[in-house]
Amino acid sequence: MTNPPKGPVLFDLDETDSAPGPSEAPPVPEPHLDPPRGQAMQSVAALTARPGSALARWFWRLLLALVGTFASIAAWNVATGLIAANPILGYAVTALILAFVLVCLAIAIKEIAAFSRLAKIDRLHHAAQEVLAAEDLAGARALTDDLVTLYKAREDTRWGRAQLAERRDEIFDAAGLVAHAESALLAPLDKQARREVEAAARQVATVTALVPLALADVVAALTANLRMIRRIAEIYGGRSGTLGSWRLTRAVMSHLVATGAVAVGDDMLEPILGGGLLSKLSRRFGEGMVNGALTARVGVAAMEVCRPLPFTAAPRPSVRGIIRSSLSGLVVTEKG
Image (cartoon, rainbow, N blue to C red; front, top):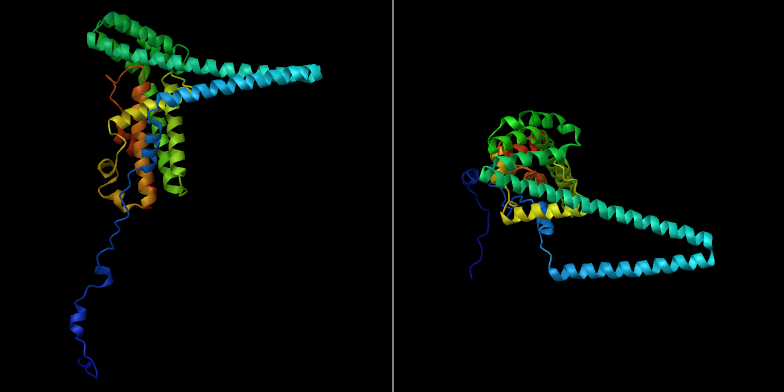
């Protein structure tokens, strides 16, 4: 075994000068950071579009029936016992119970009316498709009469109803009559619905980017999308209740999941926000942008579901256009 040489050790400084400096060093790879994919909106879509089993539905129905039966018996026994012990107090409690029952009946009637209006809009949508396919002028005129009846109590459609009534008998083409009804009645409603979609997309993007709490982005995305879909239904005349809003949300999300439209990333956002800009943003802000883009896509699908007429004369709203108008300002703020 040889001993190391003793004495000074010489270093060639010329070789060290050729080594790259810190500014020329390649960036440290971060394989754990995947590109933003909008996990909050994908979680919302998976939650709302999940189909329920028949066994689970029967479980909840029977459970509600049993709870309602026992609650009714208990309320009756309490009321009759109080009337026997203290008539004044007993009758007061009975009046409170009756008032609660009346409120529950009013809520049930409201939900039934909401489902009826949603079913009517769905029938109008299918009737319009059949009229256009068969070129049925009589069916188109009946369809326009139903549209006028649907919107006759709304002041914001008065001008459109007047325009439709003025030219209804002058158009002898089914497609032309449906297109005129779409332009006169639904064009202003489309603008209102688009504003709702833009506001919801901006809200979801902002909350996701600024609130770092766990599950806060999922809750914000769920509530914002439920509110957006309900407002879109109200704009088009649906007036959906609580159960109706949930049913609409499930229908919209199921359609998006079936078509694979809940996946969006650089391919959609970079042409709008600028090439490579999404990868230069912070991780949280990038997630917000993707969640906002998915909310815009949900909003366009909700417009198609809640609209009483399909998009024929009027162009279908562009998801990229909605993203550009609602999210571009957030990017400017982030860059500044």
